[in-house]
Amino acid sequence: MIRILTDSASDILPAEAEQLGVTVIPLNVTLEDGTVLRDGIDKTPSEYYALLKECHKLPTTSQPSPELFERFYQDAAAAGDEVLGIFLSHELSGTWQCARLAADLVNVDNVLFVDSANVCLGEGLLVRLAVQLRAAGRTLVQIATDLEHAKEHLHLVAAIDDLKYLRKGGRLPAAVAVAGGMLGIKPLITIKEGKVAMAGKARGLPGAYVALFKKVEELGGISAAVPALAGYTLSAREVQPIQTYLQDNLQCAEPLVRQIGCVIGTHAGPGAFGLAFFDQGLEL
Image: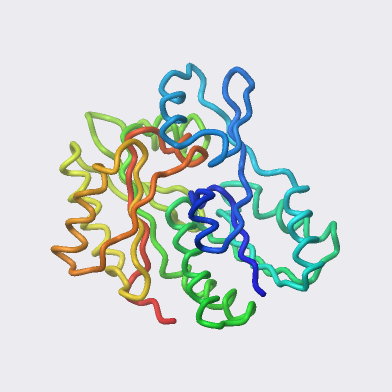
């Protein structure tokens, strides 16, 4: 059997993880009073965003303990199972390196790793594709190879209400954050070469949606092979225009909709929403 392992930056909550047949290792969020929350476990995203609004100091996020990975690998090896690990971009977190180090420490050879070179909705979409390929009967090596190809066609575009969270968390240069936050501009961000990058700017919320739609077209449209994934921080209403655009304008299947979790929400901030998708160049 092939076990699929990912981290909580994929924003796959426990109930869906069980449904998909994947295991999610939680990253950690440390509040200003020292309280440590396991991402996706100790607080719902909505509960966390209520806390985040009251924080004077931005919470810090940290990678999981290597012991969590070690136990998973040992259990899989004892059962004779193979493991496919899919983790957030190594440019944004040490989780990928931590997972690989843990495999070396327990000396297992039944594990393959895929650096998603993405995060959040993008990472989650890659995990869902892995589940789809596993169900189709692909081998571990075939799935890993297919994912390496697929991630070249994977895109994440998000509108951010306030870039101060990305700046404070060190995920975006201060000069870029200041420029993006001027004059009521709604910045668009993307993931480029595994790092957060500006994708455009728009004035006001309606302009942000239009800019996001144009970016989808610029990036090659949306593949029909894998449903797109829309995400929001505070309210599902934030992605309703995206759902309408995909279905009415692009005649795409209805996208999956999920709430963005605590770790990514710490850096994106309340009011963020976005879309992850594979472009039409994807071939499986």
